[in-house]
Image (tube, rainbow, N blue to C red; front, top):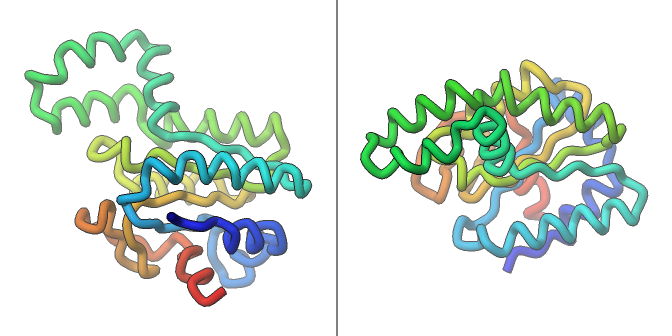
Length: 189
């Protein structure tokens, strides 16, 4: 079982925005955990958010997959997509989802709106595994770089990350050196 005590202590005692900027980076953090613990992590993230809120931090937690589903439902696309999905090639489904619920155009503005409404000090983003293959982690990071530079974001990532290579589920290979390897920083603590 993944223990988020070190993550709680780090976020509670660190100015994530200042720390990132001191290193010349945007405040985009990636917390990798074993993909086998995906189901357990959702409860752990809720508990972490609750603990940080009790400690005085303003935290938003958004499940990216749930946001995409909401956008599809808002556009009356979700039900029809469920009907055609079994017979449609997965890349055609992915292209359609990206056209309707593009991360930068549709998801990111909803996150930014909630940040402004709640004056959040940190944003947790989960649900990355459920979004694969129609939304890739590298695309999420690129969208965050463009549209969200003043609020620290922690992406919860089911796989491994060494500061350069991300392996979703430990197998799907992507490069991104732009996210700060939060789990790597906490390994020694």
